[in-house]
Length: 346
Image (cartoon, rainbow, N blue to C red; front, side, top):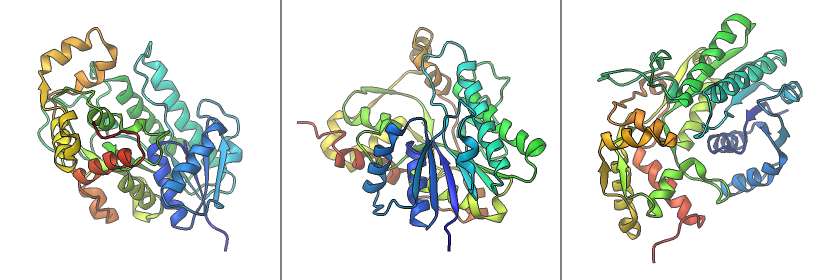
């Protein structure tokens, strides 16, 4: 029997590689896109490190979200598309259109090619950033019913790009989808095992903590979720009939401060205790610094804000039960130690 083919965009990314790993484990054929074939050896290395011994059902092809070329060929024969690729946030962008337009155009390209090839369903990796921004004085957990407020003056272009891209996807389905199904997954901060020393910038915060680069942290709360659970939620969203037309917030439902994260690491990895931050930076100081340092703008917009989230929908509708946030955070650190990305302090 021929294996069902799933197209996964942006195969070298942190979430994408774990999705590919689980798809191969579950007997699917995977065709994944990269901007350049120079990424192919890293993808294979990460999958091998992740325990995949047979890569015969994996195909790596070139397609760029910024261009129309190749997408029709990429989608040929696919039953499902998981659209994970997204332009990463530029910290030094000149204007917000530099982040927003590529995100929106990329999503439309993938949906158009999927529809034209007769794909059954697209699962789009959206973000918590499309849910929480601009909600003042919030006191109840965010759910899939919430959308970021695009009229909010202080919205960061990264969150705006994620919101506009997801809105564009639903708009496409409603007006041009011609029966194509769509489900979105909106993860909070994603932790969990990195699979290669060459490719670990997804969890730079943990690396900086363990290396002693961070002496004090801003007062930012966040939800955290393990990448393995984010991947499993994508697979459930891909096949479950009841997931069609739905959004799913990928979160454990816990809220942790950056200091909580440091304290979890301190307890689990006593050898690194001296490296880890113990103090918080006053909110006013972060906001003042962001006026002259654009790379701090996103953090400054988050200090002191409520970040509660609920995973009730994914739990009840898809029977999805993620591991605790602390386990995800420790797994990130442990994988970095195991791969030699960080070394114990002398």
